[in-house]
Image 1 (tube, rainbow, N blue to C red):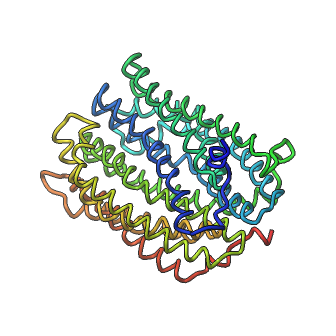
Image 2: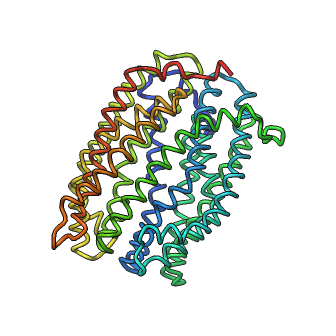
Image 3: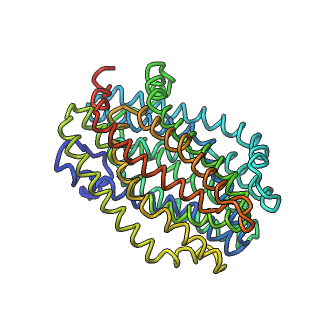
Length: 462
């Protein structure tokens, strides 16, 4: 019983062998990311099988807009995770408590903003993106339901970030697994059983996410040995709010930049027709699984670095960075090889259309090497963020997505126009993504080695 309790307790990553602590912490996050991907994947599989390829395209076309309007939560989550990790590493109970309280209050404000703005801008944005008339109503309904129920998504992701900052990646995993199973069951019931179509998928997701958020709140309320959670701590303290926003805003802007680039590229994708739109959805779903080790180790490195910077153990950070990056690259390489070997079977889960499976597999081969490059980018960016340097990854993202990816995508499309492809070859969007990932890994490595991130720690300064 004691051993079980320890598994779900906060973990001090400032002690022990670096690679072992990083791996122990990252594995639950990797499993959790797989479960998180099942949210979107289950949606796509179920609508693709029970409603059709156009419904699959509708869910996929909604994603860029959804991601753009969720940047507020990305900022709060990243800022909170960094502050929690550093104050926990510094053993500063008061500042840790204030950070968690402010985070909860800011999330409530951000949720209300999205609930109001989201439904208003949904249809105009879809029209602006040249979303085909055959799927625009489904897209709009999906997004509006999602935005109205956004609080569950917001609180789960932000409070799970707090738990991970405390070194507890296992509790967040368990809650997510519960939510994922519920999501799949509700998806099947609403879509296959009640014939609710695409809106049923959105409704199932927000209900499942709400459950996971409640479980996170209950868990935090039981962690009284580590911090205080009361009405006084929920006050929007100016100092802590500013610090959280200052740290989180660059990451939120990074996500916004990425989402805007995705929206611009989505407009190009839409010009290729429903078949390519559906192909893009399938590839991005499989892409989500391929990216999991990268995001998991990137987040693990953020928490690991934050705790060790808070404890003033910079040498341990550098050792852990080498270990973590090597493991991330190794795992990413294995998963990429497996996807290349078995990818066709994965594509077949989403659709029975042979032409669509072939097209999706062709695009996935273009992206393959990029996943290994992203392992480097995510690991080193995670270290910089954990140290408090969230601005450098933002600028790198700006360069690779806006300055590089968008022009490359449209440039290749323009140069490959023909009678068969009047708007250019659809490979253009995937080639541009590969180029941006590869260049991003090179730039991130250069800035990591420059070492300005080493001076960004704040836990012992505030």
